[in-house]
Image (cartoon, rainbow, N blue to C red; front, side):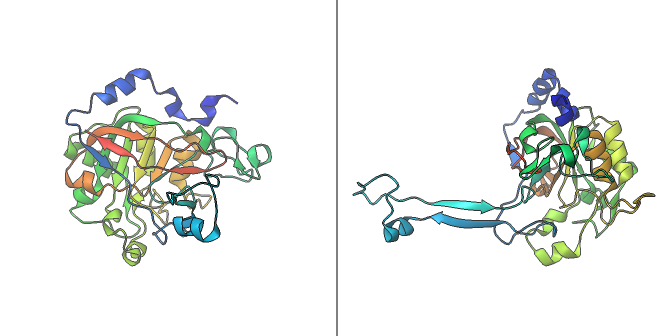
Length: 296
């Protein structure tokens, strides 16, 4: 297998696209697109909880008589270190191409199959160690603002025609190599777990996914935990509960990001920007937490 089969279309992003994207920075302002992660934070219910546990503390060093620097420490120097135990899909994150599988053979993008590529320590093909950096043009499509609401109601689909209308209203045109961020307003409820649970999950439907694919985007993200609308309004003849993930991530290598905080970007009506995200390269992981930036 070639490296391209583990990167998707973004692996062919031309150097001139980076230069073009850098020219979008005119004011020197940046927007963080990630909320703070913490134990007990709202997560997709299929994932383990996010935990931060002390491993070493100044008091623990003193009480146990530990000598991490050797016998001499008259200054009473201490330090703190911790375990972070969490799914890589905690908070703002990007799905690796090995995250989702489909079919009786359980294959994933680029020819990945469990019998050949799934080890006891995670997938070895299309895993997070292959995740590329993202430095390209970003576009925000604000669906909630377009509808004049704080957030979309539970299970509300966002289709291709509506996204096209939002582009016209915002004065933006999608281009190849773009990262397209779609705001439902869901993160305006953060971190109220009850309100968030009552409003799961609006998002793009299969027509929107086809529309994005036709425009040559390399990644897309939403402010929800599942990216696409749930439950799927059109699961197709096979009853696929996530047809959008199947089309974009599994079949075409288009990266998906979830739980992005798009609220500040939307308040300032920033619709075009330099998008920067640097995933962690962890072998065997199926995604990466990210703290992306939109820079103008």
